[in-house]
Length: 207
Image 1 (spheres, one colour):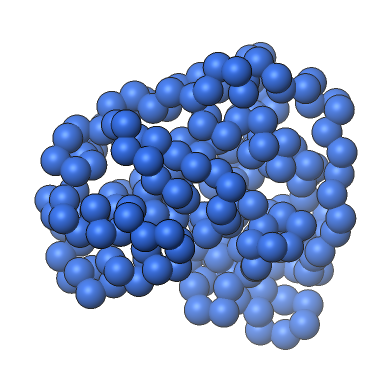
Image 2 (image 1 turned 90 degrees about the horizontal axis):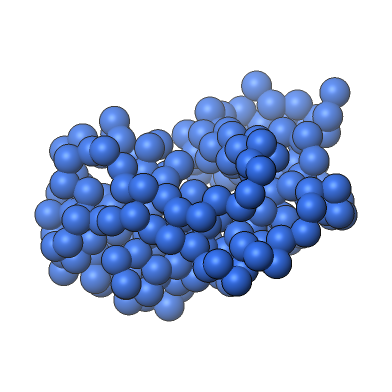
């Protein structure tokens, strides 16, 4: 059985897997966004462009998340149905616009199950119940493993991410278009067999 690869803090070896991690800047519709967390949170409020702007203007991803919190009752009405789709799309944007760094990080996890360890969230992550056990849906970890397998299958680096086919998928009052990556970044990718495994941090089982 593979040991779990758990990430919790952004400064740890695999902290770049977190949506809170800095160093993976994004651009959507020409709008600069510092983290995938800010992008994901902004997508809650396509009908409230001022709230979107407030979120993406924050320097800190946690502050970006907190700025949207008072407005959560006004999240798009289908949020619970589309949030996993939006997270999958946000991760693909993070990949395509930071291909070398993020693909290298994903592939360095090997075949180990990826788990976001969380103190509060058993939907996106999994919560510890004892020193060896985490319980949760771990949806973010599953999406990262899905993306890792896609990177492995690609014959060439992913070049662009199409918009989601959901109603009112917009940013600052403009429909979100195709998100393109950096051609220079993609051209510098090493073959997958040159990836070096990073250090371990794991749990024994997840339920």
